[in-house]
Length: 251
Image (cartoon, helix red, strand yellow):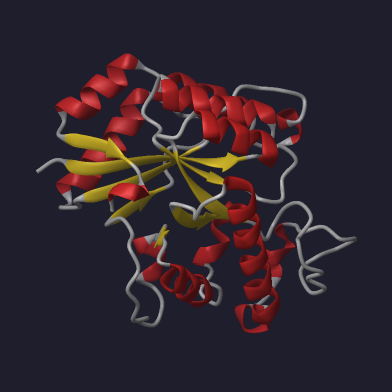
């Protein structure tokens, strides 16, 4: 049986260059899944492109470290904005009620803009995989009947948590940085397959470049990702290696 491979493009809605890069990686590449940042400037543009590309599954990229929250979030926001200072807060001091409220509001915004439930939930900078936040997001995904990105390597270090939520057997964030290549991508997925995983998600960030994206610390490598993910050779090799390219709709 073919192993399910989900190549998810994070950051849908961040800016138009990212949106166009994700669509290009879908139309002419191996990206069948993306996740949308509901509080970013180009989210309406992303929703329009989504309507034109219904085979691209769209999940929700929960955001706690960038942009303006939909709720006040007095503990996590500074001058009305979110930032990476979240990582400096002890897990015992996390404002869990604020986080749960913001999760609900971002989800409601997703329904409003995309007109349907997200295919899955993941998060910007993997904040949903913070030990104290994960149970909130798991409970929410269970309640809504939505799949969830789960990093098994992080989860195994925590106290056991009993839950039932659709996810992949394996998640990889290794396709990232300055060493992007077809060889790296194939190494990631074939090593995961060799470990007996029947479903694998590979995180990606394909994009073109515009002035908005140049403000990001991760800009030009996204062009390299775009080039790799739209390679005909890569797609052919993925299929030849016994993978089925899909999305969280297939879990």
